[in-house]
Image (tube, rainbow, N blue to C red; front, top):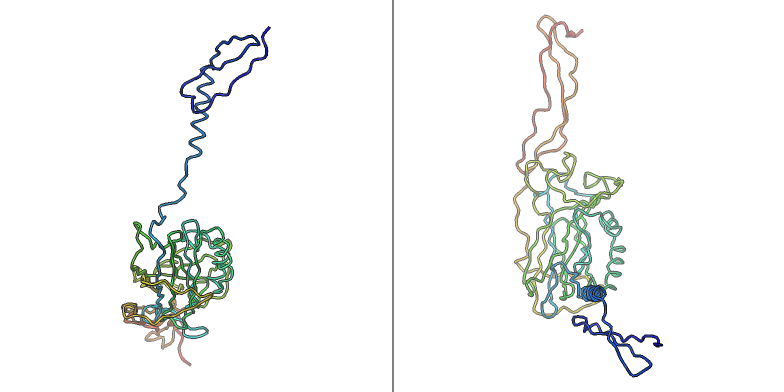
Length: 361
Protein backbone atom coordinates (compact mmCIF):
# COMPACT_ATOMS: atom_id res chain seq x y z
CA UNK A 1 0.00 0.00 0.00
CA UNK A 2 1.22 3.48 -0.78
CA UNK A 3 0.92 6.38 1.63
CA UNK A 4 -0.61 9.74 0.66
CA UNK A 5 1.42 11.65 -1.91
CA UNK A 6 3.44 14.64 -0.63
CA UNK A 7 4.17 17.33 -3.24
CA UNK A 8 7.15 19.68 -3.14
CA UNK A 9 6.49 23.39 -4.10
CA UNK A 10 8.17 24.46 -7.32
CA UNK A 11 9.80 27.96 -7.12
CA UNK A 12 8.56 30.44 -9.79
CA UNK A 13 12.14 31.25 -10.76
CA UNK A 14 12.54 27.74 -12.19
CA UNK A 15 9.42 27.72 -14.31
CA UNK A 16 11.47 28.11 -17.47
CA UNK A 17 13.09 24.74 -16.69
CA UNK A 18 10.43 22.33 -15.44
CA UNK A 19 11.54 20.26 -12.53
CA UNK A 20 9.96 16.90 -11.66
CA UNK A 21 8.10 16.61 -8.40
CA UNK A 22 9.07 13.68 -6.17
CA UNK A 23 6.86 11.75 -3.84
CA UNK A 24 8.01 9.22 -1.25
CA UNK A 25 6.69 5.80 -0.36
CA UNK A 26 6.73 4.51 3.14
CA UNK A 27 9.46 2.19 1.89
CA UNK A 28 12.91 3.52 0.87
CA UNK A 29 12.24 4.02 -2.81
CA UNK A 30 11.26 6.99 -5.09
CA UNK A 31 9.66 7.67 -8.41
CA UNK A 32 9.40 10.87 -10.57
CA UNK A 33 6.17 12.59 -11.65
CA UNK A 34 6.25 15.51 -14.15
CA UNK A 35 4.05 18.64 -14.06
CA UNK A 36 1.65 18.54 -17.06
CA UNK A 37 2.59 20.83 -19.96
CA UNK A 38 -0.63 22.83 -19.92
CA UNK A 39 -0.10 23.67 -16.24
CA UNK A 40 3.44 24.83 -16.93
CA UNK A 41 2.20 27.20 -19.62
CA UNK A 42 -0.56 28.57 -17.39
CA UNK A 43 1.92 29.31 -14.59
CA UNK A 44 4.26 31.09 -16.99
CA UNK A 45 1.43 33.28 -18.34
CA UNK A 46 0.33 34.18 -14.81
CA UNK A 47 3.88 35.04 -13.81
CA UNK A 48 4.37 37.31 -16.81
CA UNK A 49 1.06 39.05 -16.11
CA UNK A 50 2.04 39.68 -12.48
CA UNK A 51 5.39 41.16 -13.53
CA UNK A 52 3.76 43.48 -16.06
CA UNK A 53 1.33 44.75 -13.43
CA UNK A 54 4.17 45.46 -11.06
CA UNK A 55 5.99 47.67 -13.61
CA UNK A 56 5.95 51.41 -12.87
CA UNK A 57 3.28 53.48 -14.66
CA UNK A 58 4.05 56.96 -15.97
CA UNK A 59 1.25 59.27 -14.82
CA UNK A 60 2.70 62.51 -16.15
CA UNK A 61 1.89 64.16 -19.44
CA UNK A 62 5.27 65.61 -20.29
CA UNK A 63 5.22 68.50 -17.80
CA UNK A 64 7.55 66.92 -15.25
CA UNK A 65 10.51 69.14 -14.38
CA UNK A 66 14.03 67.80 -13.91
CA UNK A 67 15.59 71.13 -12.91
CA UNK A 68 17.84 71.15 -9.87
CA UNK A 69 16.27 73.04 -7.03
CA UNK A 70 13.55 75.74 -6.90
CA UNK A 71 13.41 79.00 -8.84
CA UNK A 72 12.44 82.49 -7.72
CA UNK A 73 10.47 84.82 -9.99
CA UNK A 74 8.88 88.25 -9.94
CA UNK A 75 5.40 88.37 -11.48
CA UNK A 76 4.10 91.69 -12.81
CA UNK A 77 0.51 92.17 -14.00
CA UNK A 78 -0.11 95.24 -16.20
CA UNK A 79 -3.57 96.45 -17.18
CA UNK A 80 -4.01 98.16 -20.59
CA UNK A 81 -7.77 98.76 -20.33
CA UNK A 82 -8.19 102.37 -21.48
CA UNK A 83 -10.79 104.49 -23.36
CA UNK A 84 -8.35 104.64 -26.27
CA UNK A 85 -7.93 100.89 -26.72
CA UNK A 86 -11.48 99.92 -25.61
CA UNK A 87 -13.73 102.96 -26.14
CA UNK A 88 -17.04 101.14 -26.38
CA UNK A 89 -19.12 101.52 -23.21
CA UNK A 90 -15.93 102.23 -21.23
CA UNK A 91 -16.96 102.36 -17.54
CA UNK A 92 -16.33 105.80 -16.07
CA UNK A 93 -18.26 105.54 -12.78
CA UNK A 94 -20.37 103.26 -10.53
CA UNK A 95 -17.83 101.64 -10.59
CA UNK A 96 -15.14 102.89 -12.97
CA UNK A 97 -12.95 100.46 -14.89
CA UNK A 98 -10.63 98.58 -12.54
CA UNK A 99 -9.05 95.21 -11.73
CA UNK A 100 -9.68 92.84 -8.84
CA UNK A 101 -6.95 91.30 -6.74
CA UNK A 102 -4.82 88.79 -8.62
CA UNK A 103 -4.76 85.17 -7.48
CA UNK A 104 -1.90 82.92 -8.62
CA UNK A 105 -1.26 79.22 -7.90
CA UNK A 106 1.83 77.09 -8.58
CA UNK A 107 0.97 73.46 -9.27
CA UNK A 108 1.55 70.34 -11.37
CA UNK A 109 -0.51 68.81 -14.19
CA UNK A 110 -3.01 67.20 -11.79
CA UNK A 111 -4.55 70.56 -10.79
CA UNK A 112 -6.46 73.16 -12.81
CA UNK A 113 -7.43 76.62 -11.55
CA UNK A 114 -9.45 77.14 -14.74
CA UNK A 115 -9.45 75.84 -18.30
CA UNK A 116 -10.93 77.15 -21.55
CA UNK A 117 -13.68 74.86 -22.83
CA UNK A 118 -14.40 73.42 -19.37
CA UNK A 119 -17.18 74.45 -16.96
CA UNK A 120 -16.29 76.89 -14.21
CA UNK A 121 -15.95 75.52 -10.71
CA UNK A 122 -18.01 77.00 -7.88
CA UNK A 123 -14.90 78.84 -6.74
CA UNK A 124 -14.27 80.34 -10.17
CA UNK A 125 -17.95 81.30 -10.51
CA UNK A 126 -17.77 83.17 -7.21
CA UNK A 127 -14.57 84.92 -8.28
CA UNK A 128 -15.67 85.80 -11.84
CA UNK A 129 -19.02 87.20 -10.70
CA UNK A 130 -18.15 88.79 -7.33
CA UNK A 131 -14.35 88.82 -7.06
CA UNK A 132 -14.39 86.52 -4.02
CA UNK A 133 -11.43 84.17 -3.49
CA UNK A 134 -12.67 82.18 -0.47
CA UNK A 135 -13.76 79.07 -2.41
CA UNK A 136 -10.73 79.13 -4.71
CA UNK A 137 -8.37 79.30 -1.74
CA UNK A 138 -10.23 76.46 -0.04
CA UNK A 139 -9.95 74.26 -3.15
CA UNK A 140 -6.25 75.05 -3.54
CA UNK A 141 -5.56 74.18 0.10
CA UNK A 142 -7.24 70.81 -0.35
CA UNK A 143 -5.14 70.20 -3.46
CA UNK A 144 -2.00 71.15 -1.56
CA UNK A 145 -2.67 68.35 0.90
CA UNK A 146 -2.43 65.98 -2.07
CA UNK A 147 0.88 67.62 -3.04
CA UNK A 148 -0.41 68.78 -6.43
CA UNK A 149 -0.35 72.50 -5.45
CA UNK A 150 2.76 74.29 -4.28
CA UNK A 151 1.87 77.82 -3.16
CA UNK A 152 -0.81 80.48 -3.51
CA UNK A 153 -0.21 84.19 -4.06
CA UNK A 154 -2.42 87.26 -4.12
CA UNK A 155 -1.82 90.89 -5.02
CA UNK A 156 -3.82 94.01 -4.29
CA UNK A 157 -6.42 95.18 -6.79
CA UNK A 158 -5.82 98.03 -9.24
CA UNK A 159 -8.28 100.97 -8.91
CA UNK A 160 -8.16 101.88 -12.61
CA UNK A 161 -8.01 100.14 -15.99
CA UNK A 162 -4.32 101.00 -16.42
CA UNK A 163 -1.84 100.04 -13.72
CA UNK A 164 0.40 97.39 -12.21
CA UNK A 165 0.38 94.80 -9.44
CA UNK A 166 3.14 92.35 -8.64
CA UNK A 167 4.38 89.65 -6.31
CA UNK A 168 7.29 87.24 -5.89
CA UNK A 169 6.91 83.55 -6.71
CA UNK A 170 8.78 80.41 -5.71
CA UNK A 171 8.41 77.40 -8.00
CA UNK A 172 9.74 73.90 -7.36
CA UNK A 173 10.39 70.99 -9.74
CA UNK A 174 7.36 69.24 -8.23
CA UNK A 175 5.05 72.19 -9.06
CA UNK A 176 6.49 74.03 -12.11
CA UNK A 177 3.18 75.29 -13.56
CA UNK A 178 1.68 78.74 -12.97
CA UNK A 179 -2.01 79.66 -13.22
CA UNK A 180 -3.59 83.00 -12.35
CA UNK A 181 -6.84 84.95 -12.70
CA UNK A 182 -7.91 88.61 -12.39
CA UNK A 183 -11.54 89.77 -12.61
CA UNK A 184 -12.60 92.55 -14.98
CA UNK A 185 -14.55 95.11 -12.90
CA UNK A 186 -17.32 95.89 -13.71
CA UNK A 187 -18.50 92.88 -15.70
CA UNK A 188 -21.03 90.03 -15.48
CA UNK A 189 -18.49 87.17 -15.18
CA UNK A 190 -15.46 88.21 -17.22
CA UNK A 191 -11.82 87.72 -16.29
CA UNK A 192 -8.32 87.46 -17.70
CA UNK A 193 -5.84 84.79 -16.74
CA UNK A 194 -3.19 82.19 -17.48
CA UNK A 195 -3.81 78.45 -17.48
CA UNK A 196 -0.91 76.12 -16.55
CA UNK A 197 2.04 78.14 -17.87
CA UNK A 198 5.08 75.82 -17.67
CA UNK A 199 8.15 77.71 -16.42
CA UNK A 200 10.41 74.65 -16.60
CA UNK A 201 11.50 73.41 -20.01
CA UNK A 202 14.16 70.85 -20.92
CA UNK A 203 15.29 70.53 -17.34
CA UNK A 204 15.92 74.30 -17.11
CA UNK A 205 13.97 77.13 -15.55
CA UNK A 206 12.91 79.80 -18.04
CA UNK A 207 14.52 83.18 -17.52
CA UNK A 208 11.72 85.47 -18.72
CA UNK A 209 8.18 85.16 -20.12
CA UNK A 210 5.76 87.82 -21.39
CA UNK A 211 2.15 86.84 -22.02
CA UNK A 212 -0.75 88.87 -23.50
CA UNK A 213 -4.08 88.46 -21.73
CA UNK A 214 -7.51 88.57 -23.37
CA UNK A 215 -10.96 88.49 -21.73
CA UNK A 216 -12.76 85.23 -20.94
CA UNK A 217 -16.40 84.55 -20.12
CA UNK A 218 -16.91 82.15 -17.19
CA UNK A 219 -20.23 80.97 -18.68
CA UNK A 220 -22.24 81.57 -15.51
CA UNK A 221 -23.89 84.94 -16.30
CA UNK A 222 -25.55 85.98 -19.56
CA UNK A 223 -24.91 89.74 -19.35
CA UNK A 224 -23.70 91.44 -22.56
CA UNK A 225 -22.26 94.69 -21.18
CA UNK A 226 -19.90 95.78 -18.42
CA UNK A 227 -22.79 97.05 -16.29
CA UNK A 228 -25.37 94.34 -17.07
CA UNK A 229 -27.57 93.28 -14.12
CA UNK A 230 -27.19 89.79 -12.73
CA UNK A 231 -28.67 87.29 -15.22
CA UNK A 232 -27.62 83.69 -14.35
CA UNK A 233 -26.94 81.37 -17.28
CA UNK A 234 -29.06 78.22 -16.96
CA UNK A 235 -27.66 75.73 -17.48
CA UNK A 236 -24.11 77.09 -17.09
CA UNK A 237 -21.91 77.08 -20.19
CA UNK A 238 -18.20 76.35 -20.62
CA UNK A 239 -15.49 78.98 -20.27
CA UNK A 240 -14.93 80.77 -23.60
CA UNK A 241 -12.67 83.53 -24.88
CA UNK A 242 -14.33 86.84 -25.76
CA UNK A 243 -13.20 88.18 -29.14
CA UNK A 244 -13.93 91.22 -31.28
CA UNK A 245 -16.80 89.32 -32.93
CA UNK A 246 -17.78 86.75 -30.32
CA UNK A 247 -20.39 87.03 -28.91
CA UNK A 248 -21.62 88.25 -32.28
CA UNK A 249 -23.99 90.88 -30.95
CA UNK A 250 -23.71 94.69 -31.30
CA UNK A 251 -24.68 95.16 -27.65
CA UNK A 252 -21.60 93.33 -26.39
CA UNK A 253 -19.04 95.63 -24.79
CA UNK A 254 -16.14 93.98 -26.64
CA UNK A 255 -17.86 93.87 -30.04
CA UNK A 256 -15.57 95.60 -32.58
CA UNK A 257 -16.46 94.15 -36.01
CA UNK A 258 -13.73 96.15 -37.77
CA UNK A 259 -11.01 94.41 -35.77
CA UNK A 260 -9.71 90.93 -36.55
CA UNK A 261 -8.67 90.57 -32.90
CA UNK A 262 -8.88 92.61 -29.75
CA UNK A 263 -5.83 94.44 -28.39
CA UNK A 264 -4.42 92.83 -25.22
CA UNK A 265 -6.54 93.80 -22.25
CA UNK A 266 -3.55 93.15 -19.97
CA UNK A 267 -0.14 91.45 -19.93
CA UNK A 268 1.92 89.50 -17.44
CA UNK A 269 5.69 89.60 -17.18
CA UNK A 270 7.52 86.84 -15.30
CA UNK A 271 11.28 87.17 -14.73
CA UNK A 272 13.57 84.87 -12.81
CA UNK A 273 15.50 86.32 -9.90
CA UNK A 274 18.84 85.28 -8.50
CA UNK A 275 17.66 85.14 -4.92
CA UNK A 276 14.95 83.20 -3.10
CA UNK A 277 12.04 85.38 -1.94
CA UNK A 278 11.36 85.74 1.76
CA UNK A 279 8.05 84.01 2.40
CA UNK A 280 5.63 85.90 4.61
CA UNK A 281 2.11 84.67 5.38
CA UNK A 282 -0.63 86.49 3.42
CA UNK A 283 1.89 88.92 2.01
CA UNK A 284 0.59 91.22 -0.72
CA UNK A 285 3.31 93.10 -2.59
CA UNK A 286 3.48 95.72 -5.31
CA UNK A 287 6.98 96.33 -6.59
CA UNK A 288 8.46 99.43 -8.18
CA UNK A 289 8.64 98.30 -11.77
CA UNK A 290 11.73 98.46 -13.96
CA UNK A 291 11.49 100.35 -17.25
CA UNK A 292 11.16 97.12 -19.24
CA UNK A 293 7.76 96.40 -17.69
CA UNK A 294 6.09 99.69 -18.56
CA UNK A 295 3.06 99.13 -20.79
CA UNK A 296 3.53 99.42 -24.51
CA UNK A 297 1.54 102.07 -26.34
CA UNK A 298 -1.17 100.32 -28.31
CA UNK A 299 -2.84 102.01 -31.26
CA UNK A 300 -6.20 103.55 -30.61
CA UNK A 301 -9.17 101.36 -31.42
CA UNK A 302 -11.58 103.11 -33.83
CA UNK A 303 -15.17 103.10 -32.69
CA UNK A 304 -17.80 103.61 -35.38
CA UNK A 305 -20.99 105.53 -34.83
CA UNK A 306 -24.11 103.45 -34.28
CA UNK A 307 -27.60 104.80 -34.91
CA UNK A 308 -31.10 103.52 -34.37
CA UNK A 309 -33.56 102.36 -37.02
CA UNK A 310 -35.53 105.04 -38.87
CA UNK A 311 -38.80 106.12 -37.32
CA UNK A 312 -42.04 105.90 -39.28
CA UNK A 313 -42.73 108.60 -41.83
CA UNK A 314 -44.61 111.61 -40.49
CA UNK A 315 -47.64 113.24 -42.05
CA UNK A 316 -47.24 114.85 -45.45
CA UNK A 317 -47.43 118.63 -45.04
CA UNK A 318 -47.65 121.25 -47.76
CA UNK A 319 -49.99 122.67 -50.40
CA UNK A 320 -51.63 120.01 -52.47
CA UNK A 321 -51.13 122.05 -55.63
CA UNK A 322 -47.33 121.74 -55.46
CA UNK A 323 -47.05 118.61 -53.37
CA UNK A 324 -45.81 118.30 -49.81
CA UNK A 325 -42.97 116.73 -47.81
CA UNK A 326 -42.77 114.26 -44.96
CA UNK A 327 -39.99 113.52 -42.47
CA UNK A 328 -38.51 110.68 -40.48
CA UNK A 329 -35.71 110.62 -37.89
CA UNK A 330 -33.26 108.34 -36.07
CA UNK A 331 -30.99 108.86 -33.07
CA UNK A 332 -27.42 108.05 -32.03
CA UNK A 333 -26.88 104.83 -30.09
CA UNK A 334 -23.09 105.05 -29.85
CA UNK A 335 -20.95 108.10 -30.54
CA UNK A 336 -17.83 107.58 -32.66
CA UNK A 337 -14.36 107.70 -31.12
CA UNK A 338 -10.72 107.42 -32.16
CA UNK A 339 -11.32 108.34 -35.82
CA UNK A 340 -14.17 105.89 -36.19
CA UNK A 341 -16.86 106.24 -38.86
CA UNK A 342 -18.85 109.43 -38.21
CA UNK A 343 -22.58 109.38 -37.71
CA UNK A 344 -24.84 109.56 -40.78
CA UNK A 345 -27.72 111.99 -41.22
CA UNK A 346 -30.27 111.75 -38.45
CA UNK A 347 -33.19 113.29 -40.39
CA UNK A 348 -34.56 112.48 -43.82
CA UNK A 349 -37.35 113.99 -45.91
CA UNK A 350 -39.09 113.20 -49.16
CA UNK A 351 -41.79 114.64 -51.34
CA UNK A 352 -45.37 113.51 -50.92
CA UNK A 353 -47.81 112.73 -53.67
CA UNK A 354 -50.73 115.11 -53.76
CA UNK A 355 -53.39 112.64 -52.81
CA UNK A 356 -51.55 111.87 -49.53
CA UNK A 357 -50.83 115.42 -48.43
CA UNK A 358 -52.58 117.57 -45.89
CA UNK A 359 -52.67 121.36 -46.21
CA UNK A 360 -52.13 123.83 -43.40
CA UNK A 361 -55.29 125.52 -42.23
